[in-house]
Image (cartoon, rainbow, N blue to C red; front, side):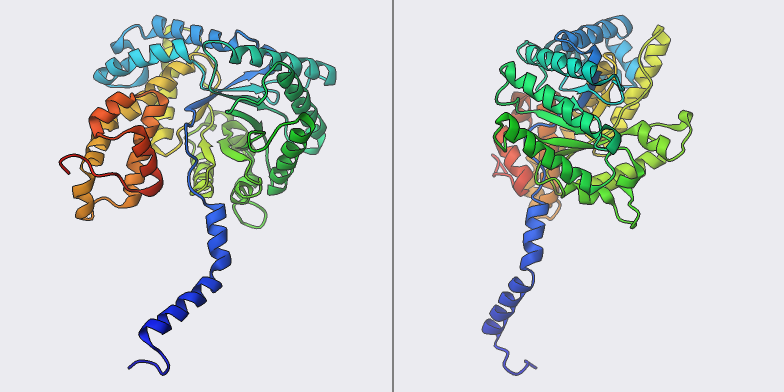
Length: 433
């Protein structure tokens, strides 16, 4: 029996208006806080080089050293398969890609480090290193092997080093701009370490705004930053809440990444040195919280580093490569498409494991994309699945695991069409669909 005064059309219309008013704030917050993933390319790694060791030849030297390691310790596909755990047939596909990558663009994301890898050296010394590193970066960016992403890691905003962090940022930016890098490179990012609260993230947003004003930088092509998740307080606050989730929304649109800090985080939990690793259960917990906090936002995720360096004898290098390749693949399987690299030879297994991850799965992914129309009609492909498949194909393309020509031949779709599908969950009709 219909309730008194209820008219099917008018009653529902009034209820719709009421719900719009009731949920207006919630709707606005959802749209502003969770606008969806960032478009464009995400680097597959970040290479950290201590500021006092960085010069204009560093990037090219990393490429040269990585190529030498590949030639010396994995000189053919079977050797690469042994060093990485890949199937030989897959190693045959990826080895030429790794060679080309190391020759043309060995480092994707360069971070000049003024924090743990640099230490405390006194104001005059750090000022001098900040100026020298900025000049070297400007020269690097003019070179043939310039990284598409770059930046610096300053000291934290904790009280003892706060002023030093500000001074390094100011000196570095002033020098870089004086060297003709105006506007700043599109992929320029500041890394803020040892964050413990959303207040520090809001403070860093203020720092960026003030530095922009001081140096004549125009937002939004100004300063952006990422934070390192390496303190327990950032994962779980005193109130029991996930502090990192609050940090994601405290940066006034300037936060672009959450980077896990393997060793600081596990050490802070009291885990022994021998147990500190990317695959420790405590690290997995922290990264799961990071992942949930960043979901639906433009903030990228990055896994941390391994301290097992590929150096020493042939057997030691191969053993380190096997560990690194396994950890890179593990991160990719868990949705972390970026990680840190601390040694030139890490580039070999970074790219080999990354390219293999995509090439092994591309046939199945592209088949599902090609058949999406028929599968969608029977309810087998939801929009979320189309988004995930398209995003995978785009990541394979932007990281160099495939080419647009190859991808279009496999799917019938262009890069632009795949990019739209990652946002809408819909693909255009394909021939014979």
